[in-house]
Amino acid sequence: MKYVGNLEIKSEADAKKYAEVAEVSGSVRIHAAGASLPALAKAGYVYIRAEGVNLPALAKVSGSLYIEAEGASLPALAEISGDLYIHAEGASLPVLAKVSGSV
Image (cartoon, rainbow, N blue to C red; front, side, top):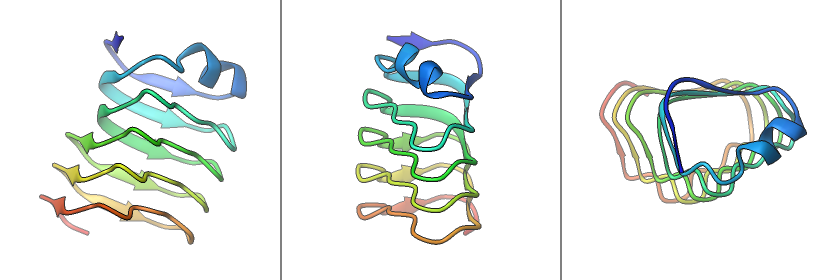
């Protein structure tokens, strides 16, 4: 399922509601600790502002990625077309191969 616009995850209930979204045309902002969006594979911009966020299928970010909380897990992320900002410890991006912007 594709979500058109900006998606904001403020609670675990929001994460469950949007669990089947595979693509977001705008930005994804996550403020809920431990939130998981298991189907999300592609997004414009991603802002992670809560600890322990898990995005297991996210493979491509067409904008920038901001990680501002510890323990973010993005095991499938291979490409970021914009910038990568990590301002927290414990971020896991094991297959990241390309960042087109600054790091």
